[in-house]
Image (cartoon, one colour):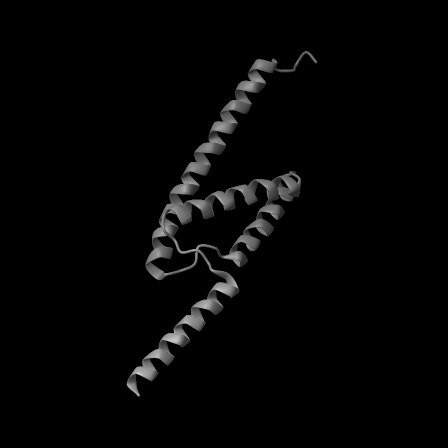
Length: 121
C-alpha cells in the first residue's frame, strides 16, 4: 500500500466533492425559483407526479450507468424533489388539492351557479 494517499488527503477530497455537490444543488434551487415564477403565472400546480416519476426513473438509469446503486439515487432524488416542492410552496405556487379537493371546488362552483340561477328567478 505504498501508493495509498494519506487519509487526510482523501478526506479533503471528499470535503471538496461535497461542497461541489452543494453548489450544484444551490444552482438547481435557482432554477426551481424560475419554475415557481412560471407556475404562478400559468396557475400550474406545485406537484407534477408524472415528472417526478420520470425524473426518478431517469436518475436510477444514470446511477446504474455510473456504477451507483439505484437505492442511493432514489433516496437522494426523493430528498431533492421534496425540498424543491417545499421551495415552490414557499414561493407561492399553488398546491395540488388532489381529487377530493378538485371535487369540492367543482361542487362549490356548481352551488354558486345554482344560487345565481335562483336569484334570477
